[in-house]
Image (cartoon, rainbow, N blue to C red; front, top):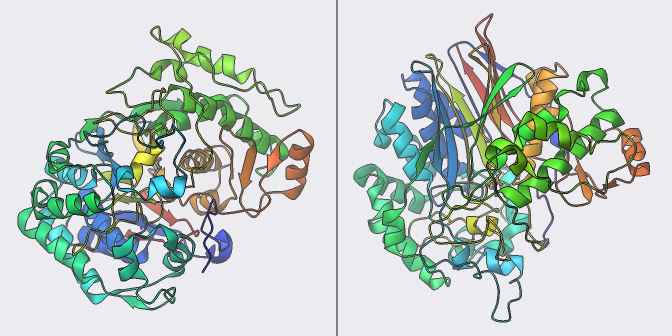
Length: 562
Ligand code: GLU
């Protein structure tokens, strides 16, 4: 087996299954990164459930079929658009640090950064899981079916067993080193990788789901599942207590709203940087009229790269949990600030002067807190799914255990892994995103819904840590500026750059354009790799047709109802 720390573990060509179709529907649409989860969502809609019901059922199903990406041991942002009330809300079930967490917890006794592999698989990396509470709250607010009914299909799936697909096999191949003792015993009992097509039964997970069915989510936050979590964490050096679980609260937030070319964008709000960054990058690009260039021209890649570099230099400087720190939320997307930042785009060379700006000028008075962080963080890859129903409700949810298999700590007897989401906090203390008890780390999750003339036009999201932002805004410009159909827009090769020197790229970008950019001082990663995994639904309000697409970078599926 390999034992490396590749930036991306999805090794197959993204375009291998590009011919998988765009789903069409009129009365509902489901898109997720696994066909069995999509099928379960579809069944819930068929049985009269709404989008929130279906989303909850899908989240449980993904715990069975994509356990390395998401599950009840993790967290997520669930965006709900409720058609009748025209409300769009974010059920923020993002993780929080336990009470004993502290700013120096990722440093050793000498003040040195603990290497990533070690700090990300240690009990202290595990944040309080929030997804169950977020789902429960969304269900109380907008759902129509009881939680127990929505869990049932996933119990059947877990008991029957799930065939291992190439995505899961690749994840095991690359990340088996993250698995703790219990997870290793379960996933790799004889030390050899599993085969594609092999069936994996999940009796312990089915048992956990039954407990949740019988006792509700209290079994997790204050009952037997919670106790088992704390015991497992204590064995792995963690310091979470049952009180941390008991006291955990989600928030129900207004989305971050922005405008792009007459479209209204609703995306995640802080503590996710995702929504604000997607909006800021789009606003930086808005006046350049991207559509005048070929979609694979150097001019397009150049503009995208510089806009991302400008955006991410602000991201690392100005973001933290808004319950704890002040952020220039308004300033970051103020038109005057955007005008000022756009001047960094020169069309001649990679601009070495790109650094964080001063959005406070266009906000209330404030300060910046940039603290340099180690560059050893591996790329996270989780999951995004989306549903719409016959009443026009929409759910867009990105949920996660952070890195593949999370912390690798599996709760004995309960069959699910715990996240390592606290590694999204700064490792070096002193900045806005330093670890503090009860605080939420800065996320990049960007579940997004775009409206045109007050009606839904597009919903999308992606996993992939910072690359979430890149995947989401590039899909949006492919649809809006380049007029691509949804499938093309998602399959179009993406590029990604943060505030570091390298442009990551997907197979298929123009080599000529890459050469031009290199001559302008840009650096490209040696090899292409998959960036993100977008699930999306487009709404044709004129004809009433829904288009759904699951990205071919995994074995996802979109299904329409008629
Ligand atoms: N670290 C990610 C975040 O921004 C987790 C989600 C993902 O990588 O897909 O919240």
